[in-house]
Length: 256
Ligand SMILES: NC(=O)c1ccc[n+]([C@@H]2O[C@H](COP(=O)([O-])OP(=O)(O)OC[C@H]3O[C@@H](n4cnc5c(N)ncnc54)[C@H](O)[C@@H]3O)[C@@H](O)[C@H]2O)c1
Image (cartoon, rainbow, N blue to C red):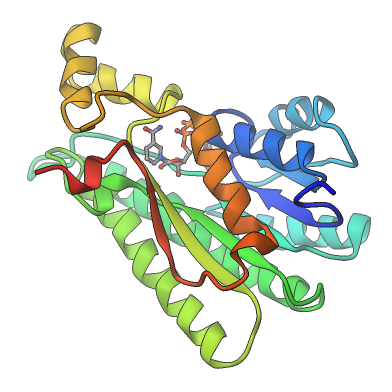
């Protein structure tokens, strides 16, 4: 039987990158996937390519009212929600002492407030959906091992780790079966990584070499590798895993 058969999974930021890979793998493993993206057309384009009974929703994760509307649409179509993947995120280099305050706030709004609103909006429907619900957060290796220029990004992901660990603990201690876990990707080949290369101001090959140095296995990651870890955490295979922080980073968080 498919690993996620019978489950409904909402993936944020699923119009491209890791979110799209996660949506594709979950659908291939039998989930009904709710493809959430800021632009409805982007969500619909991904949903149209998925097997199963997918739903596209417009969702800017930094807007609490849009979360309410998205969850209402999920309840109307499926009557349940088993998995939430907080994948949407922004990364902007340049947060130094003279960096842009607006950029700092934007990263907090999306990377911290997004999962916060999502948790509050999804919990009531997840509670009605049975004993095997799971929230999967896409964090970052940059919140575990900090990198110059990424203070805002690292801070936002570290704040979300602490918030989600707290929620995971509260749920477990209350006997609530909803589990929360986090994946920490290292550099992963998506548009976000291309933007990070460009933000260094170096020729692309030099920027790539610089990023490769923080990956002891000498490789950047692929979105599909993050999706595999998300599949484990979303599924009943991880039923006793709570508050885990799983690196998918080529060893970058344990580098000397
Ligand atoms: N690519 C990497 O090297 C890397 C490394 C570590 C962690 N991450 C994290 O992985 C996740 C996915 O990133 P990616 O690499 O696929 O990047 P990406 O830029 O390809 O995709 C990010 C997605 O988030 C969406 N998004 C941004 N702001 C949003 C908002 N306010 N509301 C809804 N959606 C929004 C974008 O539209 C896009 O679909 C992010 O949380 C990112 O921080 C990425």
